[in-house]
Length: 231
Figure 1 (tube, rainbow, N blue to C red):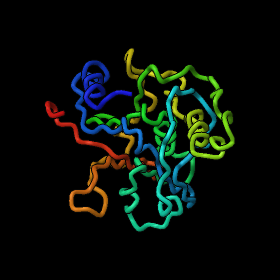
Figure 2 (cartoon, rainbow, N blue to C red; figure 1 turned 30 degrees about the vertical axis):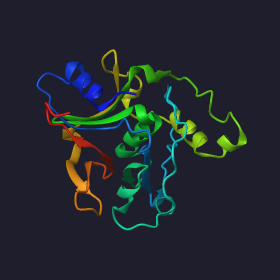
Figure 3 (tube, helix red, strand yellow; figure 1 turned 90 degrees about the horizontal axis):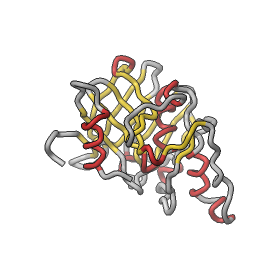
């Protein structure tokens, strides 16, 4: 798993296009891995992708904590979910076929290896190339193990690993350098809104990238602002 400093260096050394500027990034946290979702009026926390597998991921999901009970049950107001230490972001859509859901599927499937990147040209999900398997591989670990792990969150995320979105064309031909793989991306021109904001009920708040797609779906992801030279 890359550190923030390593990730930014790889982005700047080859992933960014000429003249492209990194603005926000988020990932690399082994505890804040979950997404919450409100899709078609249905609440789910943690969100578990339902799409068929397109690629496998070699990711360690051991000892991942559960979201708090109020967040699991939807017993919170507004953006209070931000203060759950296991929740990385939230996706809202009227259907599982929306763009924000495709983005969330990959962030969940690749877990701590998935980074959300925002630039002045696009938003993207990237991962360490060593963690990305070939298209069509099945997750041999799903459903195996003790009954305790099968009924617990380890199995849930095992399923999520192989529930990668098959909607985007990038899933058929992953792009990126030798160390980073771009799993998904969307140019800013195809977004109705892409902003950064502070969320939560504390004075300082938490930084989030808020992305609203033309289809009405929204994904909010915890990110940090990139200030070149300050790491």
